[in-house]
Length: 234
Ligand SMILES: Nc1ncnc2c1ncn2[C@@H]1O[C@H](COP(=O)(O)OP(=O)(O)OP(=O)(O)O)[C@@H](O)[C@H]1O
Ligand SMILES: [Mg+2]
Image 1 (cartoon, rainbow, N blue to C red):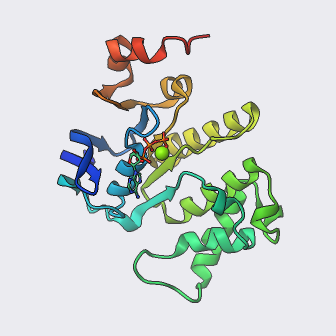
Image 2 (image 1 turned 30 degrees about the vertical axis):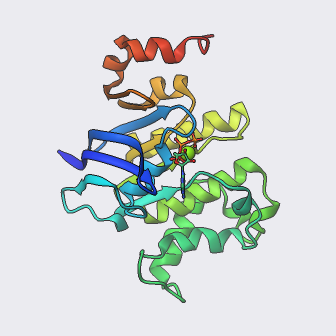
Image 3 (image 1 turned 90 degrees about the horizontal axis):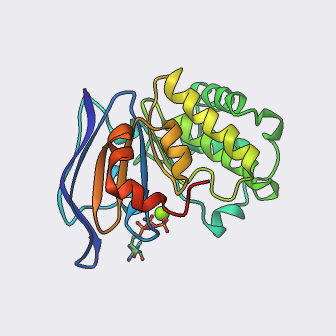
């Protein structure tokens, strides 16, 4: 059953379109990888799925009773976020904010959920540390734990392994895969790592001048894949 459908979506800024007539859908349990060139509109699409940005035309339809509140989001990291002056446990807990209703205090249920997700990401021992003092890999784990506090059903990840060393990258991919396979969380991940996309994803959305959406097996046979991976093969 589809839980997210995009129909004839055109996205852009100040009247200039960057993605035209995009159609795709995501089913419960899917692992969708979004790949494509820098500046092609991948992050913009993710913000549109979260209703943080309006499309120029077309619709994002959430089915099966899914609301934006059930979607966890790990944004693309910015330099500002790297210097964020807060404790790890505060950042994870802030994932429990239901969007729209700003909470000044968190209840015991929120705190238990934050604790559970810190355990899951093996960062409990970092709880009292300041976020800005952590390594890149530790910071990504904190952001993933934060996103998990919101992700009851769906997790949106915008380049979750950017800047991580190969070993930590692999660990992150394994963690995300486990969330998908064991916990049944639907994953939508933006990545420039085509090898990981082809290893873990069930479906691929390629966004550049031309667009591809389909299963991993279909993508592998497609001309776009051959062109895109040219020079990226081992
Ligand atoms: N707030 C904004 N206002 C105006 N233009 C924007 C804004 N955010 C992004 N853009 C432009 O929209 C285009 C798509 O940006 P977006 O961040 O969605 O690309 P992306 O596919 O995520 O790229 P990358 O792989 O580099 O992260 C770019 O040309 C960018 O300059
Ligand atoms: Mg981006």
